[in-house]
Length: 214
View 1: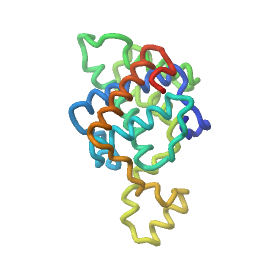
View 2 (view 1 turned 120 degrees about the horizontal axis):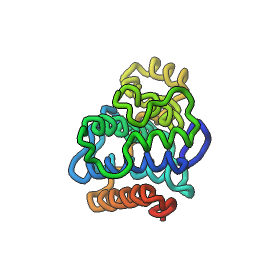
View 3 (view 1 turned 90 degrees about the vertical axis):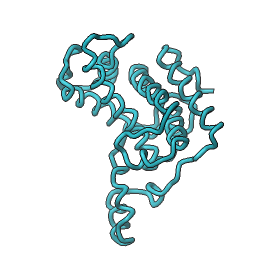
View 4 (view 1 turned 30 degrees about the vertical axis):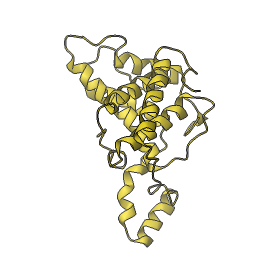
């Protein structure tokens, strides 16, 4: 489970399919390198820490029996990275003029998740090739999981103690939100977590919910 603005929950099937597809892509990247996603609080982590964070948020959002993690800057940035990767994959897909990517398109997955969630407003057509038009549906899906973007305020920890305290009080940010350090597992454990994360993502992608949650 995960603490979302809609309550403690896991993702619904189409939401989960999109999330798992993106998580699996990030897992492939992590097999070779650290990730750089544009979120400093996540990008500054070591590779093994990034794996631990994504494994934790993957289980929280895809496994009903998983206890909800404490929401820290690293955890919420990790969730954002999964949705940011969806945005990146849309750009890759739109650049794939020959249509060589197998399976459902990212655009189809996004629209299915939006229809399931009852996202209103003008959704782009499946064949829309304007990348900016796809920001709105992804933003809507992301907002069903993330409360806000407090994790982007990491520089506030460098303010004076009084200024930092006032900012945290105004925004309702816990004292350890920014400074909580994600686990840094040894290499062998990190590889096990990465394999487990990929297996979980694959199970969801193959419409086998619950598998990989042991």
